[in-house]
Image 1 (tube, helix red, strand yellow):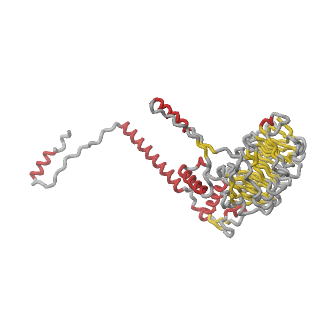
Image 2: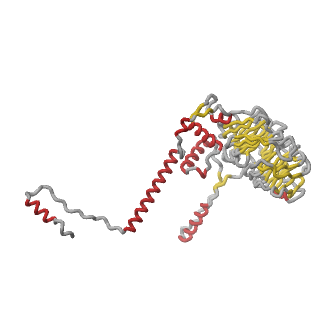
Image 3: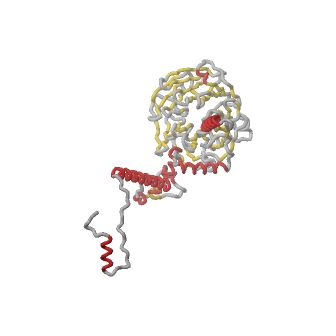
Length: 511
């Protein structure tokens, strides 16, 4: 105790001698703060600081999610003026035909919206709360016009035995494990009836001015493309209700006989009965012209196919040549030669093998890496083949002919010189013009453009044509082309009237 400081009793005595006071002199305060060792104190302070930083980061993330604003705002954008009439590629950003000048920030916003139309945010990049809200909105939209999907739920039987506690605990654990792996599966597609609903045409906002030669769905987005002899490529956002047009591109010197997306959907290749083809870069909005292919003398490039792996484009020639081109550089890689005239080509799903068929009914399997034929077989019946298609799972091979007969083989055809088809489908009476398997290889579509309403859908593996659709009352006109959407929720059908009809296949999800 410090003896230099006066005690409480001394102070009280002085106060009494001076006459006293009503004010009570407080007792000296005693510090009751616990003594914390310096190393522990530093640890606590660091922990509090880390917790504070995490709270601030969480608040920042929540603010970003709530506000959904860009990381950088440039005030100079407001001073910039952009004319939407100055370039044809900017006209698609207009909200009406008369709109012209907009500010820089509005221009940026519309570019962003245009990009998001073509490339929607993937599921893994979506905040869980937004994903849940979107799922609720999607389910409410679809509930207005679609019945719930049929599900097969296999429940495990109750195995509890109350008389034996240990057995009960074991069974409870076993049931829990099985419930974790409970399979809730869609029923396999029935071969008796195909649930189909007609929705608004793909191109109802901008019909083609000629025959629709190509219709295709974007591999990653809910977007569809039409192209035809009016030299125009059109893109539409598919919702089944309005299907708004996104943009159109005119190739002034090329009536389009075939157009296709590349494997990742960033480009469209368009070709016709010319020695050149066009590449439309969707992201950049640019159009490039490829002036022919080295060593390719044919006057038409319309018969081409892009590999699923995204590395190659193959062009089929009249003299039996298969010209392999790099999808990245659009430069020649190699030639492969078969007997007769090449009528059709298709790929294995991994892009390793190329399959071709010719006028002599010989089917070739090519190893793309070695550029060699590894197997060939004769199509049964010896009809003149017009089309070949390979299923996504590699189990089925379909070959259509000029008589309308479609032979369907299984994978054993790749080991035999004269295989027999699983079935010969004879529901078409004129030459097979287009043929495709859907994504899960449960449907094979076959069509002919030589006669009205010639489209049939074949159920796999029963190999029976669906009896209820299309039927005699389904007006398709002359079917030029068709395509299944990536998840088979839609089928689009291009016809001679310039329309791309759209039907909803209710067994499958939209996306």
